[in-house]
Structures are given as structure tokens and as C-alpha cells.
Image (cartoon, rainbow over all chains, first blue to last red; front, side):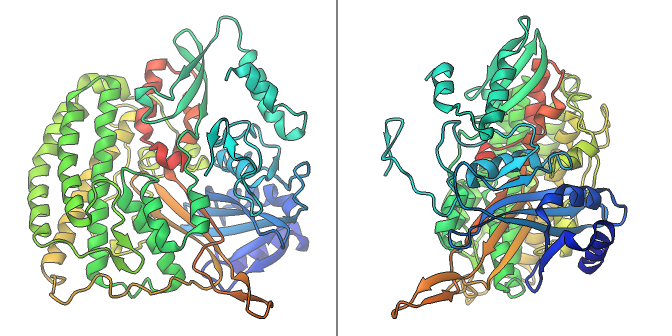
Length: 166
Length: 421
């Protein structure tokens, strides 16, 4: 199914406000989805016999920079029966306050693969996933402060547990 | 630091820490006849620094909670501050048992972004595929050898390492390093193959083929080995797909899914090879033995690919005195602003890199803000196959015996360098 056909399929099913934008022109086109409805979109794309995007290749949390003030999650889906790929994106503006993390719905209920990817995005970028069954830190220690892959991240201390940071 | 002190440090009552509290509560709620056991991070069967927290009832594993991150080396953070060429040595260190495959996929991704992927000379492409397949064999040999040792067979481990050493020696001859090669560069290679490499490689293939027959007699068809692996850790296909398993893990569950065939990158469309899948010969489809057998079959297919590469490298793509593997190397790696996800078949499965590459804002001499093309990616995400393959472990090891858990872990064949990155 081509990119345009997928767009028509989604708007026919969920209405016009489901797709809030698109990125074309590069090597891979991406659909910008309404962040609140990403779970329904993923489930539809997975279960619809015309698309069957049953494989979540990759899930990336992105901090689009301090000036932009935008956080996003990028989903790379692949269809095993049709051997096609699709990129979905969701974005939200956020003020970088640590008590107010950008928050997106978790797609763990659709793809089990999202579980660890979302945990990684949570600890690295500081994106909260609503409805995630077990959103603990994954790679970093439980008491790590800050979100290391944020663009404004700086190591505050000279020492981490008595070890000097150069 | 004890767990108690640790708890005091962390718990702020925000909603972001709820999951941590739930986890601690779950461990505390383990009933009195249950035992909470730590397997790892120094346990030999975890193949590196993986810690598994087991909630066991006698010999039965009720729940497995993996804890990873002991080998986290900030690959993505490094990649954000270095140019594409400078990151290649870091990709080598992700899956350090198959470094060539990692850097091959990284380089192909960057070449696609630059739009020079069609200009790479055929000889370079064939050398890349040759060294990648050699490295794939080396990686599978480790998987098989250490799998034997996990289950209690010591000899296959020594045999596999003996044969792997030949491959390590040859790759060292080509690149100058034994495990972390930095051999494949964007747009070319570090060096051409050394003189006599093709002949030596052919000798190895001839030497190695009968060794595989021996290994099959010793391990694959061994009754004890089959008893320990058949019908153990069955991974149904739908679970495998849902959890994003790939490589021998997914093929072991009976799906013909190999990105070398599906995406047909590099020169793989010109090469003949089969995609082996698990057939449930000894037990049911998707059990540990099937995953093991897929690796054995893949070694044979890789040998077949190597022979075809050697044929071409010795005939129509023979070395010429004026051949320069660095001739097509771009002086500056400046892709156009774009997002790009590239996937390829590493030794363990689908290895993907996602590049976010916008223009960078700089201030020019007059203090005005300008947007310029840059050599440094804005964000890189690496999707390691081992990472996703390991995440299915809690799902398939519910209610198994502790000894079988060891067999399941070994059959997943993960490398912690890639899980943690």
C-alpha cells in the first residue's frame, strides 16, 4: 500500500484531524499523527488486512532542541506480509520543566517491542508514556538525575558517587 | 549501598516514580515460599553483564526481571557529538562479536543519505560482503560454542574457538585489528585486501567445511543436547513478531525473514543463498534447538556466499595496481537535511540506525543567525537486534525450570555490548 493510500485509509477511518502533517521529499516519508490517538492508529495499521504493519522496527524519542521546545516520538513500522515500511511521528511542545514531562500514550498494548524502547526514551529524553506497564529506568541507575540525551543536559556535579567526572 | 538506602534516595512521590515503587512492592510481595534470586551480573551463563532477578518457587521460575545497562557506553550521546566517519569505531563496539556487520550497516545508511550508495565500486562491495560474512560465521561460532558450554558440553566450545581464530587472524591481516576493525569506511574501505588474502580465505573454506560436519556429529545430533534443547523455550511466531525479534530468533520460529533478501542491499541480490528457518525437527517449531540449528545452517550459507565472493574477486573483479579503495571517499560527509532509518541484517538480526539530520544553526561573523549543513547528526538512535531479542525473555521463560532458563538465554545469543550500547 502506498503512502497516499495509507493516508486516505487513516482519514477515512478516523477523520481529517488524525493526520496533522506530513514530511515528504526525503528518502522516507513520515506521517505526523495526532498524539492522543497514536494507539488507535497503530492498532488499526497492525490489524487492517490491507496494511498489516505488524513489526515495530524502532521507536525513538527525540528532543528537537531548546529553541524549538518540542519533543517527539518516531515510530518505524514494518509490514512483514507486504514488506513495506512506514514512519509515524508525534510531537508536543513542552517547557522542559522536570515536573512536567512531555507525555504520550504508550503503544505497549499494540507492540510488545515498544516496552523497552519506551523505557529507554523515558530515561534518556524524559518522555513520559501514559499507560506503560512498567516505566522504570532501563540503562541508567535508578537514582540518575536529569535526562542525558536532552539537548540542554549538562553534568551538574564534578563527582558521581565519589568518582571524578572529567 | 544497600537497597534500603537506595530507596530513600529515590522515592519522591511524583507520578514518574510510580513504576519504581510498584516494582519494589512486587519484590516485597513475593510470598514466603518464593525465593528472589539474582542471576548475574557476573554469572557465566549470562554472556556478559546481564542481571536477571528471578522469583522462583523451588526449581520453577515464576518471573524473570532483566536488569541491563551495566555496559552502557553512551553510543547515542557520542554519535551526536562526532561526525559520521568518527562514529564508525563506536559502532564496532556495539556488537563486538560482529563488528564488520555493524560498521557496514552504519556506512550504508550514511551513503544512502549522501546519495552515493550507487557509486561504490563493485570490488569494494564484494570485499565488504566477504568480510561481513566471515564475521557472521565468527559470531555464530561463538553463539554455538558458548551455547554448548552453557548446557555442559565443553569440547564444541574449544573447537569453535579454534576455527574462529582463523577468521580473526584473517580479518586482523586485512584491517590490523583482531576484533574491532574500523575497516569499512563511508564510501570505501580502509585498505584493499592484502595480497594473497583470497587464496588464504579459500584454503580456510576448504578446511572449515569438514569441521562443520564434525561439529554437527558432536553437538547438533547429540542425544543429550537434543534432550536439553528440544521443546524448551518455545517462542511462538506471533509473540516473536510482536516483540520485534529478528534474525535467527525470528527465523527459528519459522518465518523466512532475512533483510539481506527482503531489502536486497549491497550486492546480496547477485548472490545465491538460502534462508534457513526452524522446522521443529526435534521438537516444536521455535524451540531452542531450532534457533541453534538456524545458526548452523546460516554458517553453511555464509560459506556459500564467501565462495561466490571469492570467485568474483579472483576473476572479473581482480585487483589492479591502480585500484584505490579510498578513491570514492567523500572529503566531507555533509548529507542534506533529512530523517532516515536504515536497517540491515546484522549477525543477530535487524540492526537499524535512525538519523535525524537537520541543518545546524550557527552565528556568522556579523552576528546573524544562519542555518548551515553540518557533518554531525542531530540525533542517532541505534536499534540493536539483541536489545529486542532479549526483551522477549520474560515472556518465554514463565514457568520454566532454572536449568532450562540457562538454555533459553543461550539460545537467544545476545551480546550485552549491543543491548546496552
